[in-house]
Length: 49
Image 1 (cartoon, rainbow, N blue to C red):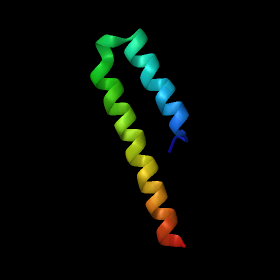
Image 2 (cartoon, rainbow, N blue to C red):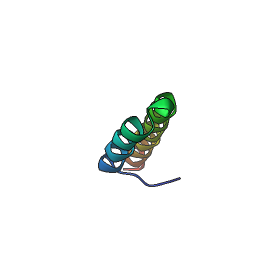
Image 3 (cartoon, rainbow, N blue to C red):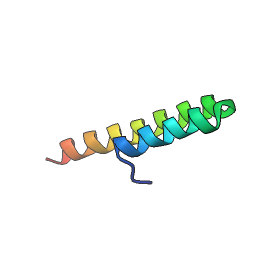
């Protein structure tokens, strides 16, 4: 799993909508996907506590 923090996600999203507006749906999907991975990792960590 790739490691990204929220700043990375924001930069990726800003780059996508600024430089590649034709790929906006893909950029939105990618950010949502990474947020889902982050959420899952947080939940898994909490469960292990």
